[in-house]
Length: 595
Image 1 (cartoon, helix red, strand yellow):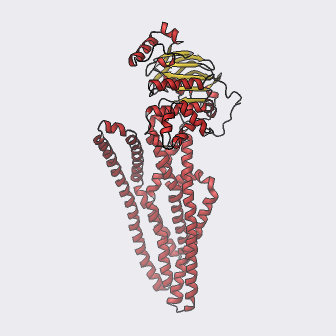
Image 2: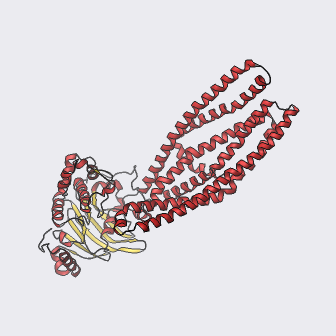
């Protein structure tokens, strides 16, 4: 019953390749029909040749048996190849579907659960569902068809044996269900453990530096041991109940076969059956009852498939973003607006913008206006709301209330593709993808020539570093760029922005990991490259933005004041405090530095 329910839920996954699925099942049924004929041929061999003495039947029967076996083997190869191909494609289909939805759900939802949950979804769950569709389901269909053919042959040979088979089959079907609840319970626990282990492995790799620096190896080992002890315990219990399910079925089959030997012997003695027919009937009974044992062994896999499909369906039910950056964020068929404004600077305005996270108010009625082509800076202490504000501008954090206008249009009217085409960003924490340095910078504009990418790298202050690499821009970067310093990763992000030269550039603490000289050089390149474009920059190092057209001072999620450097230095106490702190932490900086 569970397999039929799960099949109904999984059927839409089969639809895109239904012809190949149908071909695979056709090869299966034809192979089963040929295999079902073999006991009947063996029956004729016993009755006609061995006991009847008609040797002229020997060669034809053996030849036919060999041809049936050969054809069955070829059909089995074709079936195996078809379902192997389908298995890989179904995993990819599921992962693409999960990944596509992952790109549409709100970013805070992803950040809340961390990588463990989504690694399990993309890895364990998609593979488990694919295993059900292309392995478990195929095997269940194969065994069910084998049983149907065998039952038909038993009725053809002797209706009384057929009745006996029908009476014994339900008993064997019901036996595995005795263990359904505990198998399901431990399957869910195993799924939860795999999610937890995925998150732990990610933390272990990402936190290698901290673990070594703080001498946490013993603590890490204890966490690891505790997690795996629970995994081993639940895995063992699930395996025990699976084995009990299978072995109980074997015991029941043994009892049925003993009954069959006794009943069949009486039929032979009375002349109702020949010896060959009894041998064939026993083989057909094995073909009828043995699949029940096999199917009972798949009961745990069915439960695991059910749990995995539940997880995937629950994830796909998470509402996609609808208010930020277009109504179909990330959808391939979203309609692009007129792109005649591409290349023009974008102005923006916030009106009473409020953003909260986990019940805490981050932005409290923020309002400001930046004209097209202006360089606007946002300064404030850590926690003042600068990063959250920029996330809201990018459509990565939904606003509770208020209005956000880009280019005179509400942010909700922008499609995700339009936003990513015209708006560039440098995050405080730079993510570096596995690949070459060239590929990582080219993310800014994938169509850029290598010469343009090199120029952007030089403008970002990467020239000495790139020239010293053995393969220059084509040097391969390890996972997440861990061999790069924090400053080098930031310069990679800045090079992406310089390469893109967007109509609006958002810089979130872009130089926090750079030294003074490099920071001045990189900011000068940014200002020159982005001349005539709109630039927003957040920083707690206020001395770097003295030349901004307008500076907004954020404090506890609201705009405390706004103006030029000179205006704020004259009237805003908080701005003067931030400026004094900056010079206190870096006394070498000249107070007359103009950015």
